[in-house]
Image (cartoon, rainbow, N blue to C red; front, side):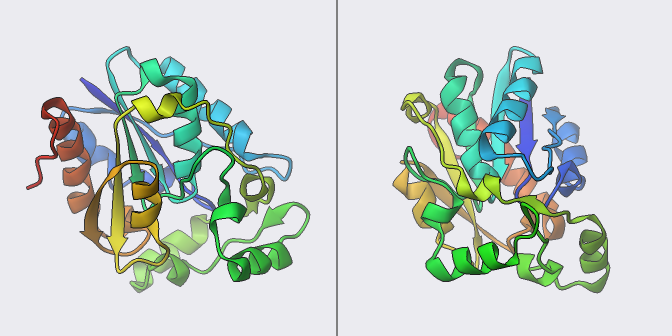
Length: 229
């Protein structure tokens, strides 16, 4: 049986996967959604440790690490530390790069300047739901009630990779139209890439197509090629 460890991106929580989890479980998979801490003293490496705890608690079967947005950095480092526990890494519009990469090394200078200027007490206020591509009024209201400030250190910290993660198969799912060069980020670490039409928070607006891709990526990894339907 496959276990999906679904890691939410910046400003989000495990609730971001609420519409995907039942679909994955209906397909016969298990799901784990770590609740990453958001206190001002939390950094990227604290989030990695929390994902490692989830990995270590997962059944000893096919475990797929899925990271949305910022969490791409988190799941890649977690896989680097537990390559024997990870069957596949999947990025969903994920930020990734080589050893030493972080949000502030990958993002543009204007992005970094805006984030630094908005930070208060070690926390970055949550953007409006529209900036995640969510324009439906009901979905925007639902998201706006749940978004929470993100620790600044998660953006200033950088990854520590030994290279072990490069032995773990990986796939980059990128949303179209692209808001940041997520396809290029995934290709830069050697992942095959698959497009999906939808906003950055595609798990909220299009959970069914995303779930199909996640399941097909796992099925395809058994034969060496994705089986898309």
